[in-house]
Image (cartoon, rainbow, N blue to C red; front, side, top):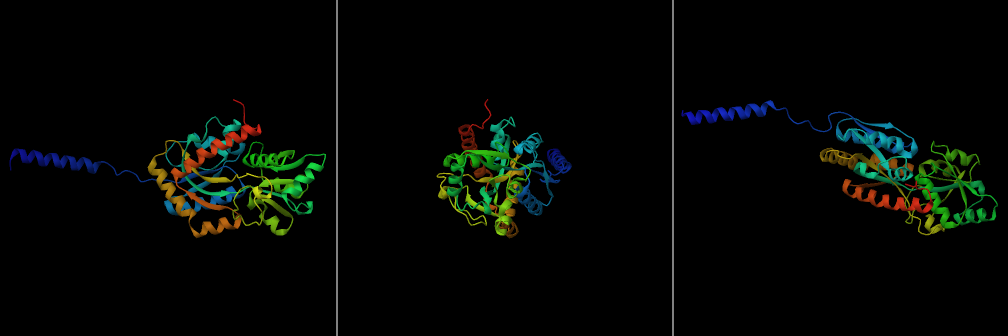
Length: 320
């Protein structure tokens, strides 16, 4: 065998040995993924189910951890500060914009990489059945005749439900005192007669509507969406042009590897489109509405502009 051939074989053997010595690149995920849940109620219910279903798809646990507070600021701040490795994600919503424009967080939606939109929840205006108000116009007429302002419970001052409420009653020319909640007690305050109405999500009032103690006067969208409650849209009921829905989805810290985002997106898609998820969503008035990471990113950016303008117009944006 020639010297040249021998050297060539030695070089090939060295290359093969070196290649064998390099460990195979680890496949994401190698360990559990933590999903921060910002709110209780339906957000927590849907978030937990989503985490369970995604766990089956990823082959590793997705653990839902509740981090409420500050209209989402506590949870967003935690996730934003974590390593962008795909192991910390947030069950997010329009609240990323409301918390930013309120000044509760210094960063905005760009601090996160979108993973997928999962669905939407439509805020509804509910009153006690015994109030006698059959429609939004009845409520507005009674408020204008009274020498006292309406009291309407919302999730918190500057929260999404506060913005929706303000946009609604401003259209009607009705003066309102907004009573902040944020701990899930808003419906209890309404049932006790301490407030005149609540702006909440369908799952939180559905059982009381079925029991006949509460009545939903309208849904805060322009187009009718099935939320398990028979009620007109606020646009049709007299608040012309009102069209505000809460989207919910998943995001990770900016800089998270595209491969991890792709796997999380695929798991979210499969979970959202599963019969189990669809059935549970229908029962609580949550509307599955999957969007890819790319399309979801556009929705977030467009919504951010709209929410910022609306909060400024309503005078609830923190002055810079």
